[in-house]
Image 1 (cartoon, rainbow, N blue to C red):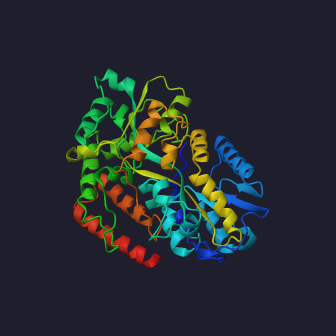
Image 2 (tube, rainbow, N blue to C red):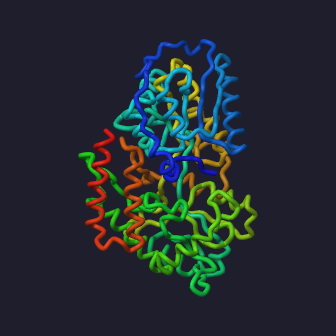
Image 3 (cartoon, helix red, strand yellow):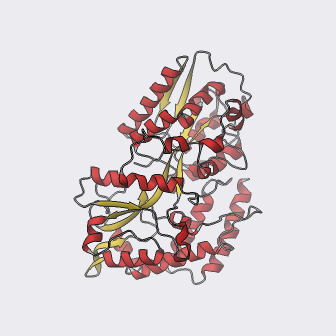
Length: 443
């Protein structure tokens, strides 16, 4: 099950996240505490499902065995707004170490000084981050050179599909280009009166992980220009993606008809998910979906593949959108050297990363863990490992306003797919101006 960097999480917490710089002891890796002294660390994380909590506790137990002087008190089910409140309060109420599912918060955490820059800690430990972590993961865990977080597992997004339905429709392989994607989605759609028995794909941007950011990744977008200004109107990738998605919505019956059908879908994280129930034949999703479908007892064969790319970018096939859990040290902590030992272990120790990835079925976040023979890799899971490795896989960049710019773009995309935007180019230019204004206020 994913618990990493999803915009739905950011949307729920962005309004509450206004991180203030706290009393910073030991900023810049100059912490004075003795990492070999007996100490107890407070570690806050967001996992709450029993299997996930068990995996965290097992990882912590391995750490404590290797560091007998350091004890770790964990607190789960912590959201970014709760973290923010504690960091502002400071003192004993603030955690020493934090993990968050919301990569969109990195810009705020770094820009405010709420989390310490880990570059000095990496340097004094002899950790070359460029040789440890994939490039894209480093990009979403830092802001303007401040590496205030490190990756702790990641999610890769691709296509999960019903191979049995494919075979019945005479489709022998997953679509690689957008035109193939559209044709396959049309063939797999079964209409029923004014509704559907099944859609080949739910293409609207309210369809769980089918977000504008996931699709835009296949066009290789540049969200901000060299001057730091929003780049949506200047980069043709955004208009091309929005047009392609709008055309796909029309091809499958239109926005209103699709949304009426979608209203009957079950919860994304339950056995009633529409892919599990056969209501959709293809699902834009992460590495967790195939395993969840099997756990739900589906009777059809499952396939996975990268998301299609634009027809003129077939050489890029295999890439996708990636995001992930982040981990950092509170600037209010008086135990930063000891806290670094925990962060270093959980994010860079190959055995620890592989064990955690195996336990919660997420993609490992280090290059060594991705190649580890101990990593449990099913054929369905391998697709997402390959997406995570792909040199052109990309993500949404950190910004001082957190993920507000993504929500602004998403709101515009909602209007486009509904048919409320007569001029996409002009609308993107207006969206750029709104994003620039929001970022200027956040800095």
